[in-house]
Length: 73
Image (spheres, rainbow, N blue to C red):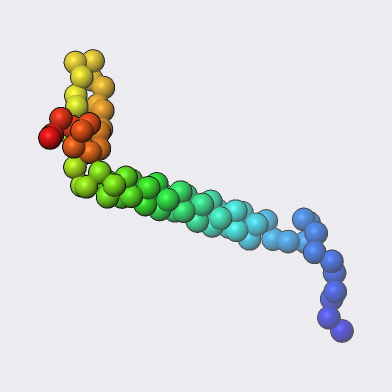
């Protein structure tokens, strides 16, 4: 007969658990990146593709989207 031992933390191989955790983390990071990029593309589409960047004397870079924010009429 088969060994029907219940699955517990001591019977599961630790590397499989770590591998599953690592795979979930990679999928989570990829999902966050995709959502961030999709949001940026949506904002750029709403701004009719117009964007500009302003460099301040203290080194701060400000990204603006849209004709009004960039000073175009």
